[in-house]
Length: 145
Image 1 (tube, rainbow, N blue to C red):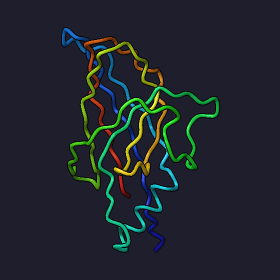
Image 2 (cartoon, one colour):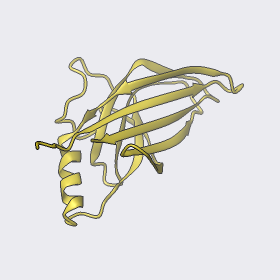
Image 3 (cartoon, rainbow, N blue to C red):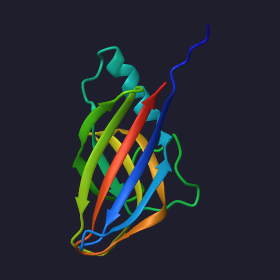
């Protein structure tokens, strides 16, 4: 029997305007980064203790998109600790609400450690246009299968 371990992740964005009207809900698959895979292997062996605890959003762009070789967002905008839960089916879910006090276009997201080691990286398509008073509920799910 050949049973390999596979990781896959997805961002889900719920974007609201300042009147609490939902503007957009969409999902974006991500790339699992090599540095994230390395961290997982070390966590399994007890060689690391820095878990994946945060969600980062950014304003960067790339003509080539995201790559497993990425080690950072193209242009970081905000990083925050995530609320983390487990869902049946071998799913770990990260969540954070980002509030905006200025107009900004969010184009990318990542989940990583406090030291900035990325597990997953995604470009948001379409980009999320935020105005002052808007907020985004950012969910990230990673499946282990």
